[in-house]
Image: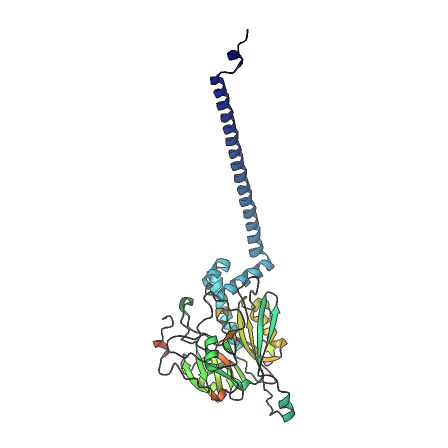
Length: 388
């Protein structure tokens, strides 16, 4: 006869069954973890293999096809215009980098040698014309493939003066120059010594001429330099000149920079391949009627504006009727400012607007503006370009 005690499983067997159930679950869990780990590892391995194949195909395309080589050199040229120029050697090699920089320098020198013969029409307006007179400054937006920017038109070139810093030892933001002097507008000007891209903006490159006077001279007496500026009548002068030649031309406002991109109505850059990469740009030009054009292109900002080549800037100038035009300092220096110091564009510098030695400023009454020579008595060799 079966008793109640015999009909129930013993405590020992129940516990053994429980332990057996737990250990089974543990074994299944362990197997699942191993399976997931193996699946993840296999996925990573497949991803790595696919990336290696794609990288190999990309390398073959970049180095062994015409279109790939064009992209590779465009990337290198773009890096050459930045503070990371040395990175370009990883794309084209150190020897090719050195050769390309030397080639651009020689090309820019050659582009500045043809003598400019353009004339400007600056007739005295009649009363009727005066009533229909254009505003002194006009700003329009421009855009193209991969870039956004602005064109500032100054309809009277004699209203432009070169601004310089107010305090010795450090450059000044263009917005500060505009606000301080009461200018209607301002655009960054010439280049400056910038050791390790940490310069203080106070030591210009080449020459600075303001109000017909030599404010700064960093070249030897017999040397020539590529300048961008205006004479006493408001005619734009750009190209390679000696100091003596500039004096004979009646130079009024000028900075050193290059290259000149339009001369006698002809573009000097033949194609995008010679456009010196993609970057923020500033350039100055003049139309036959005497009006001055400043092209300001933003760059290095994905999703907004990557930047423009010098060829792009040249075409914008030609489309707007420029008969002469030249490049100004670009990159993180590029800035367009209006009355009161308001910045119109989007400068690319991660540290904000840069401190600069020069800017082209527009005034309603430039003859009333006092712009002292902040470099008076200083020798170029005595200026520490990196001292904060």
